[in-house]
Length: 480
Image 1 (spheres, rainbow, N blue to C red):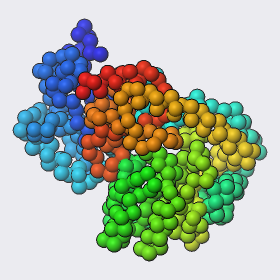
Image 2 (cartoon, rainbow, N blue to C red):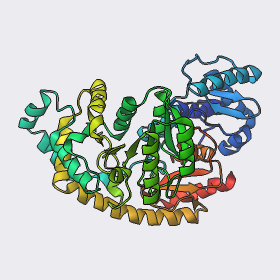
Image 3 (cartoon, one colour):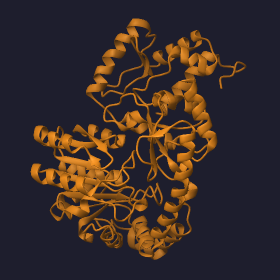
């Protein structure tokens, strides 16, 4: 709340609050600030106070005024400009419009990283509905510290730390991963597996190896904004394919194939983010037919495999790693900060992918990879995953009841870690208001290749069991 007795004026307090959120990327570039009237009502101040605060943000170059549309967080273009001093009125609108055009021609990752930066910036001690990971207390275990101690014994430190590791990654981990993939019917030998610094790094290795700037890439929409931004930053041309309950819109894919000859299709087949949809066998077969007919590769991000049924349809299993590349990681289920990921690739691509890895990171940390191999080999990761799944099922049931009771509906059948929720209001605006209450949301606009207003939001079932959150959510929605 703004404090009238503070040494700062109400205008300065309000401007400082918005400025901190913009700099911490809790308000994403392109996000619209509340209207003057809405902001005044929300914070209990006069409209003139809000106007003065917004003028300060304009002068600092943090926001831009768009004529007849309001104030928006400034986009970060390729040509970073100095803050506009004293800009207001028509001058600010003219500068903002020009900067907007530059920003649209040079899309960056800033929209996508807004939520990620929120994960590192402590909003409050409350459970955070927009987070993409399990709560820390869910991941606590005794077997992980024991595995690390084993891997960091004096002998192991001398064996692994005083020289570069294996270029492909630790051999024991790759053997353990090959056995794990066999359980998913994905045929990969240890020689076809390359470790990486998390699954996102693996996706980046694939993109840098197979693509060149300007290449068309099919992506699922809605989808994970980090992947959109990463491909944009590499200069790729995104072709958004609507994601349905059984898979991508095959008619749209076929049309893209005829018109644009895409080089790659990026898919989350199982527990898709943010909808938690799973691919059907029929859709999978048709996708592989298109890939063979039009000569493109498929990278399948199986980030949520640890909480998914083993029998779920996977493109890599049906294709046998011919045109497909499997990507996985352990941040979601084990330890976000271990940053261990991997890819399983067709034999003919392994050397090219390895070259890209070597140019970027040389090798990956063998000590943690050896510790992870131990967790897999001893069955500890499997048992841990089963406990998480049981706990998640109970959490999902409670979260769904609370969401429905608060007036939400589900745009997709609740499953997996995430719920795709229809709110009926602009979730960018909702996210700003909930931020004032200490809650970080994941508004629907984040999950589109081109940011646009949305009434949807993604919730984490593990962090939305708090009735106090849903009560506050319902209060704010009624006022919007």
